[in-house]
Image (cartoon, rainbow, N blue to C red; front, side, top):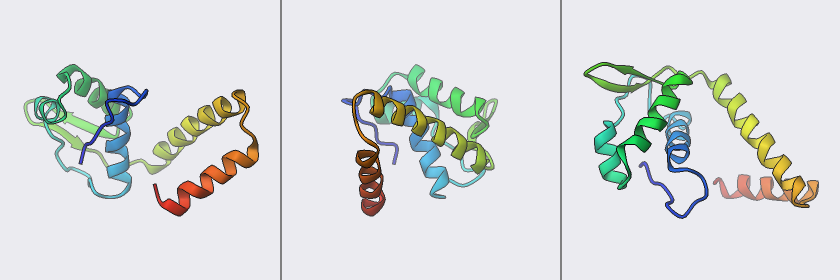
Length: 120
């Protein structure tokens, strides 16, 4: 459920952050669902607990999850507008990087269409 790519250039905490947001948006995680503990998820993924803590802290700061002392971390009621705005900000950054390395608008449109068709 919380798979990560150790070969990716994307930091592991960002992969975890994005995966949890994705699961929430797909309604696989619902409001008030409890997330695995930091230690449990770290052990499951084979990563340092500080990495999981960093992802959870960012999710908490963005009001995507909430923590109850002594009880754990839980899914907050999603603010889908805020999540969509953040996704668009990330998209804008990626598009600028793509243009900077010489990709054309038609390349990006073809890529978007390919992703949508394959439902990645």
